Image 1 (cartoon, one colour):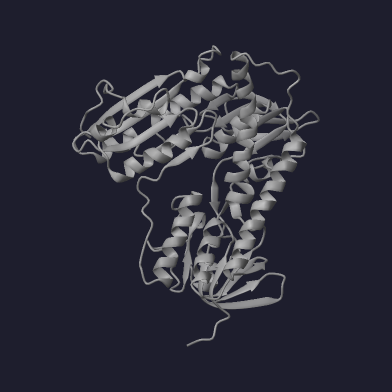
Image 2 (cartoon, rainbow, N blue to C red):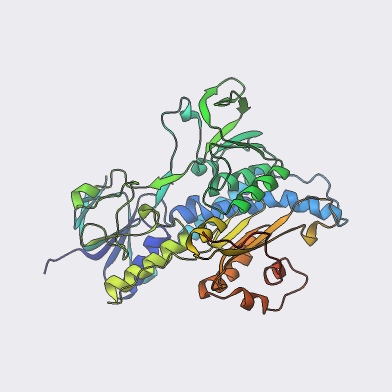
Length: 460
């Protein structure tokens, strides 16, 4: 048997890589993790966590508007960007430190540096004059933002990663994109008082979501002051003395202080040395893996966004657990990607689990029953706001299982986590209806929906 430096070497100290390393080390294996930037990965350092802090900061302006309707008054309320950035960075540093400390407590060696594969068992730490070999290797390098490099003037644009560290809050911003990141940052900047425009080349935002959700959210974010331009994209970006001029395909010219591209993320595989190790990519440029996360090299696995299966932090963590059970516990497991709940922290937010209506119509052989409600939240009763909540249940007409839940409105991410339990368990509409409502809440609408949407049930 070959003598290796480590039983497992993990490339990437994000949520998935850290979990896999810790579990394996706690089993008594010799484990190391290489990280070229900061421990915590996309979620902790430049994704979910700092973004959620920004969302919460930006929501306060809306909360102040609501408060005035309830009799509160606020004199000279203002937001200070540098103060927020400092508080955010201190907390991110604390969380990153906890991740690093937990690795140490588990007995994992943390290697600071970029790891590049030299062959199937060997990695080189770039610039550190260090070569390491390991019996097994796990790649968990995540993803990075994508920008259209061929677009004239693209060098003047930023991505979400730079948005977390802007030296000053702009007065005007244009965000290109229509997915999670684009609509979330549109809400953030608008809530912080920035004149915000969202441009997307498709017919509506949030491609892949239920059509009612897409249409409803597009209307609601416009009520928050966000200008939405659909079916259009950039021709070029021109830098002038007064700002950045966005030349659009429809002939429009919009001048802003910042242009942010949120047009997708791609697996971070550049210069990783995959070919040297026999690790192949799929057609989308992600690492090719089998259901158990094994790559085309027998002793190398990959998890998380670098595999482009379902790019969510909790999924990467579950893939890490399945990897550990399969490889080190002789208990083959693979993650079940069906009925995974997700949230979009737009303003208002979105919570979704299961199938959209269109997906259900394709998969339910005898059609679907659809239940939809739209209403003004009780919180807005004194404000004169016309903002509305959307709730939608999609039900298999044959089995009466609830196969999709879609919510747009306050607290929808919290509601969808619990709704996901029912969907995952395969509960029927009758079982939802048998659950007594909690009153007065928005969530009670999920168990009191009685009227089918007209013409909802149909085959195919």
